[in-house]
Each structure stands twice: as C-alpha cells, then as structure tokens.
Image (cartoon, rainbow, N blue to C red; front, side):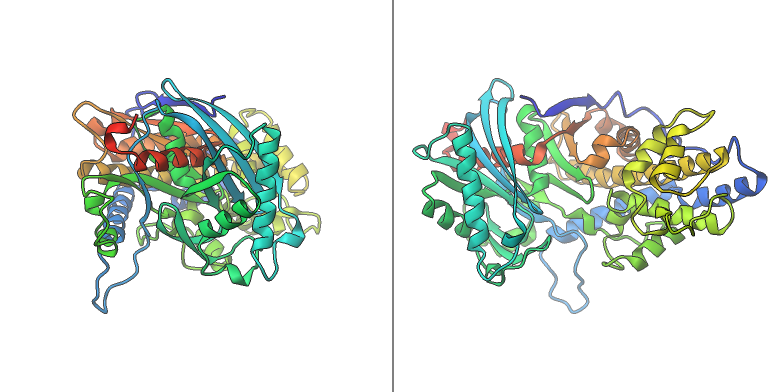
Length: 509
C-alpha cells in the first residue's frame, strides 16, 4: 500500500515564469467603477515584488545560520526566530531496507498506531493502522500514567487486531503533540502539555522513559528507539521511496520544515555535545527548523494582517505562519470581506444575526479552495453557495461573487509565494553548504498537509516562486512531491533509521 503520490518533475511545475507573473489579475468583469477602484487598491496590498522576496530569502538564511551558531554571550545578542533543532537522525534511507516497525502518534485527542512492513525493492511497503480516541476523563489528572496506560492498552489492542503477539520485540518511534526538549534520538523532556491536557507530574519527565515503563508493565514487546518530529517523518517517509529526498515540509493548520545539514555547520550542537563521538562532523543530520516562528521586517503586512495579528492570542509573533497556513488564511479573507462590506464595495450585509461572516474564523480556509476553483463565470454558483448557504450573508450579486473569488485568489497566491520563498531559502543554504547536490545529482522535496494537498492552485504557485528564487542550474535538478499519510508512516521509518544508525557501517544495507 503506497501512501504517496509521484514526485512531480521540476521541469513540469517549475516553468520559466517570474514568481509574480501568474498573480491573479485585479480586473473585474462585472464590477462597477467604484468596486474596480477599491479592488485595485486591495490588489496592491497583497503583491510581493521580486525585491521583497529576495530580501525575505536573505533574512531567512541569516536566521538559519544564527540558529545553528553558538549563542553569543554578549548582552546585545538576541534570540533568533528559527530554533534549528537537531533531530539526532543521521544518514539516508536507501529504499532497500527491510523489517517490521511500529509507530505511535498522539495528535490532540487522537491516537494513531501503525505497523509498517518495509519490503525493500526500491521502497515497497505495507501499512496497518488504527485510530483511537482519548476519553475526556483521561485528559487531566494527578498522574500522567493513567493516560499512558490507556495508550498502552490501545497499542495492545492494535497488536491483537493485526495478529502480532507480545513474544516478538518490535522497534517503535513515537510522535506526540507535547512540547518536548529532545536530548538524544530516544530521550526528551516534557516541557509543556498542550491541546487541553493537564498532568502536573508530566512536566520535566523523560517521555520515552514514561512510555517504556508503562509498556513493559503491560507486557508489550516494544522497544521505543526514537522520538519523531512530524516534519522529520514527512521527509523520511518520502525518502524511503525516493532516496534523493533532502527536505520535508508540513503545511496545513500550521507549518514547519526539516532538512539535512552537515554536523560541521551545527556549532551550537557541537558546543552542547563536546564529547559526543557518535556524530562525525562530515555526517549529515536532519534539522527541524520550526520555521512557523519566522519573523521578518520584509513581510509586507496588509492592514488585514495587522488586524488579525492584534486579535490573535500570540500577537507580534509567528508572522510567517499567520500569512501562509490553514489556521489563518480563511480569517484573512474574512477580515478583507467585512472591510469591503464596510466600504460598500460588497452589496450584502453582515449585521444579520444569522450571518456567520460576522464571527472570527467562520470563513473556513477550505472555502477558499471552492471559490478559487469556481470557473462558472456566468454564475459563479459554487461561490454563491459558500456565501449564501455556508456563511449566510443573504442574496449576493455576480459582482459580489467575483470580488470574493478574487480576494481568495490573492490571499492564497501570496501564501504560496511566501512558502516558495521560505523553501528557496532552505535550498540555497543547502547548496551553498554543499549538502544537497553532487555533480550530477538532483534532490527531492516532500510536502504534506491539507492546505498543500487540497488547495488546487497551491502546488504550482509554490513551484513557480521557488524556481524564480534559486539558480536555474539548481532548479533543473529539483523535484517536489506531495506526500499523503506521511507522519505516522515516517515515524516507522525513523525507527528503522534508529536501528540503522546503531549498526556497524559495514553491516548497513
């Protein structure tokens, strides 16, 4: 069972066009002169010039280097935006590795348990997966062990369902949605619980030790060999079937990126591990950038971006995330539409108590997909359904629908171009540091997440932006693959890689 789409060759989506040339136009087919004037002004607020994009790339690369460097001890030093967290995963899968591995993911109140059988032969694999729900009464308490005992019961049930006894000991990697400070491949301290969980005794505990103790108490034949970040999993899930993969991106409600870098570039890591013998400075290790936190004065924030930021619960930070991800894109559109209503550019009224457009975050980002894909220019019926039936705005005109469609296009286009610029920053850093490309080799980028997968125009826009911001000789060797179900499958690949790292070099497949 393959969980992937094919890697799209760079020559297909990365045409020889400027990053800005495909920006949807501001001209209205049905609008009045007043509406056209207002839309021309709005259009300018969502444009990204080549100068702005190149400045963003430069700022991003600067932050990457700062995140990898030894922290300055001078009072003037500041905390950099990109955390550049070592994953402790080194080396590359070949697609020929074989074995059976388990993966556990806790995402909110969802538990996913997965068995992946790696068959080799260029990346063949088979997957068994089950999903469980955490009951409300197990989300808080005095002892985190009550939650982990429940998770252990789910894993035991999963093994029973797939006919896997407890006699065989399987390697497992785990991915959890808690804030963890990872100190080695299979060690990490819980810093905070999120998503409504509250167990005071969990803070400061080693997450792997907690799971090991409860699993062993239940008699489960499982050895937890690695903690797995979701973006690292995206990279490795794709790399098993496409060994040239060097970058993994998750872009959905949030966003993040992982990539390979040389240990010799990781001065902070080397300073923190002066006696570490496992990692040669010539070794390549996966770095988790945590790029959702990226800030830049070069971001051209519109009045609507600033309003969203002011009303958010994390004001003044995570600007890149707020301008590009599924959590916020629909809200930016809603802010624009209510502003256009106030300016009497749109004919409908949002003051009716049934109108959902009045309420923050009630224009879902998925509505943008529908409006953008609506090519029935005589009626724009799908856009009408979104506005009148989903958002309850009342009767709309064809001009209203066209304006809404354009707003969705502009907000979505800007998000994709910014994601392309961030990706270009990673690519340029890798090439300059000699990580990605050999003399004749190319490399692949794997991307997962609902926004990237479900938004029809997002992928080609990202590719156009990426191509415009990197040298032609690099773009010609680049491919981008859209990955499905990557995180949990990738965690199992991390477990395999953990075993592979422990093998003597001559025994590695």
